Image (cartoon, rainbow, N blue to C red; front, side):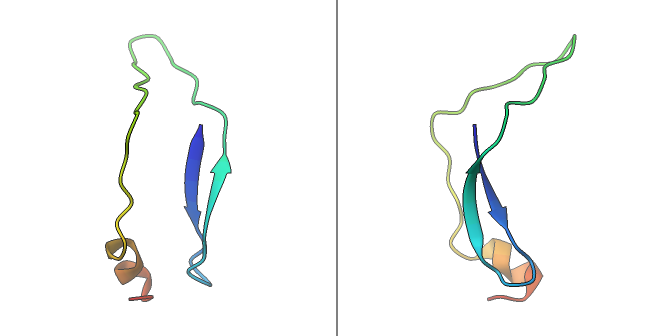
Length: 49
């Protein structure tokens, strides 16, 4: 699965492949087909915006 990483020192972002999490008894793993990444609010807390 894909995951977006943001490096707090530089503010750079990177898309990387990571393994899917293991599903334990009594849990669900939901596959999303679409998602949205905000253009700015994530950077506010880190001081980039």
